Length: 222
Image 1: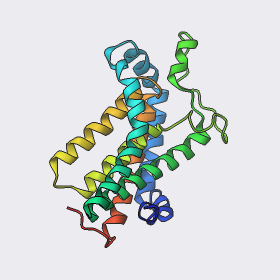
Image 2: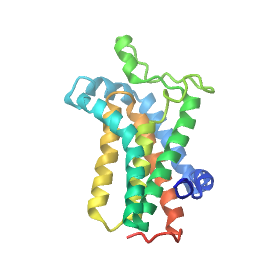
Image 3: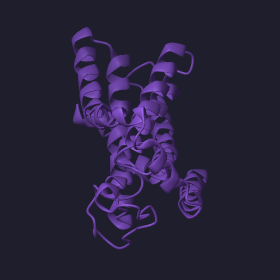
């Protein structure tokens, strides 16, 4: 199991930054800068915090944590029971995409240390959307930019779409899931720009992982 999930893992991490992929990381940084300096992050957080969208926060945070663990592991064992190499491969791709999404986003967060919008409740009418604590591990890996929930969700969604480009129901389900997770954390524990950056970086990771497994002979992807 671990062997399937770790297939080309180190090289896929490197590929997520290599060549044209690196430009997507730069785009995520540029868009974040624009959303922060324009005041959009603060406006968005203030605007949606008291609306019905705020009800998304808890289920999105919980699902964004557990689904990347439960789904790949479940699919893998179902594939073993049914002797389906396709399911095993799909599980491995989703699992690795989630792991790399978490590793890369957490690495960024270790250096950015951005304060979460939930702190607004304790600092009334003070714009903290521009507050970054750049350095190493000043706020751990749970505080900062980009959103790991979003990066992992979009990494899994992009990987799944790349594996099954002709399956409309899979494309729709993956898109809805990733969008829901991003929307949910954007109204609670993350700024809007954290989510945008996580979506971009996660999508790159998902495509890299899916492409690497497409050449693996252990299964045939539908």
